[in-house]
Length: 594
Image 1 (spheres, rainbow, N blue to C red):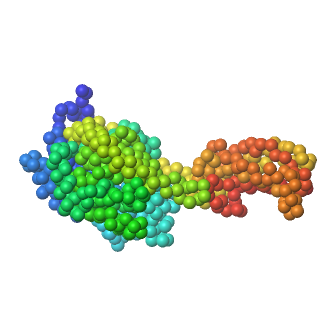
Image 2 (cartoon, rainbow, N blue to C red):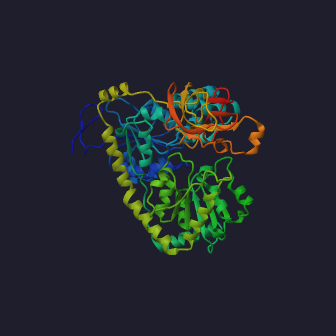
Image 3 (cartoon, one colour):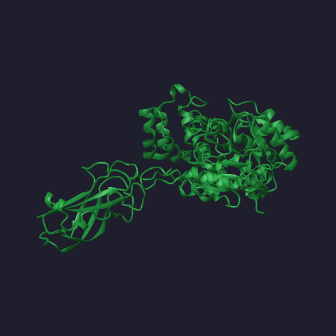
């Protein structure tokens, strides 16, 4: 294989070990990324010159390294953050980046000394809030103000970041939907030599959103060790775990694992217990519960509290035993921070059927590997929320619980998938291969950085922006217009705002023209005498394309019959599924027919 240039400009032969500095939370930190690192470090230690960074404000990592590395721990140095360097010939920093407070120092070090970022969570907006406004480690709270947060999110996302920041300024709280919508990762990722993600979905999004070029991102399967599977031992461990936690042996047991937040859809799982298909099932919830989220209150409200078992955070060994003790594991997720769920992969490794949301990165999992549950329908015709998710979850899990052969088949395929796609040794090889690809001469990298374009922020659109200023001109409506005759009308819609008007095909924020023809007299209006009543309220005519600021668009309105008596034609621009912002400025046109 051809040589790849090193930091010094010399050739780095592919069989020469790379020197890397691993920057990540590590056990005993209660983090899935800490466990991921502990699994991967033994493989990396055998393949490269490895140092591990002791992060500030986190427990000492030497005991955890001794457990993970065994005798090889003497070959791995623990260094301070100040030992990281971007100098030629220095070890390559690899930062494990997640979306919670354990990664504040990781983020700051990656900004100071760029290297490779392993992006475990697509969204880093929650981390941004934690860093600047939270009580955790990071900037001095005395200088962390709304202005700091606003400046940071505007630098990431421009006008849209400013719109998302406003609720914090005026209400003291931010929208969770806004945090998921704006990932707040551009400035961090664009400084790095390369970015590793764990799914094709995440890699594609980074390229499509213009954050990185295709050669700057690599999708590498997360390494997950495959536990030894002796059926008799596993059955004994399952019985012991159920006994230890007073879980019934004669009832189906479902499990939800990992950090419990509303996005894990645990509330959906609890409500599904009230469905007839799961009338005998119990639910085990294992993981730290986020503040403000109370699954037991939901359980009491639906009369299923006696069948919900809340265990809290479990260490690595108990976590694996808990998975082995359940019959079906639930790993629902919406919205998503773009993470590859380590808890889902560990479920598959233990050999348990898993149920996921049919959404984003989880949708790319093979149908033969997991059971997929659709997200709830947006709205029913009557305007009520259609709670299809609960019903679908209960039906699919109920059918699976009734079919022992199907559960065994899913379990066997799950373990085979982990063995084939997620072996830690293969993951370590893939990480180091990506690192070699990005080890290029410093001068070339500096030139690439100098020509890099700043983050592009899309123009405001009618989905959110309040400026809907424009005007309509109509061709073909010149008077006189004989009663009862038809004319073909043509509108020209002018966008006089600084906002892009979305095409009418968009479900929200799209623009359409609404036309009405109404008799001028109230008597005629009430009589329904056939004076053009079928033309009074015509179907909306959607914009066929987006309309940029300052542009005009001709639109065919079709044939219109003039009523027999006095009437008024009105045409105005409307927004799909949203109220118009300002009656005074939105485009409109009218004509009195005497």
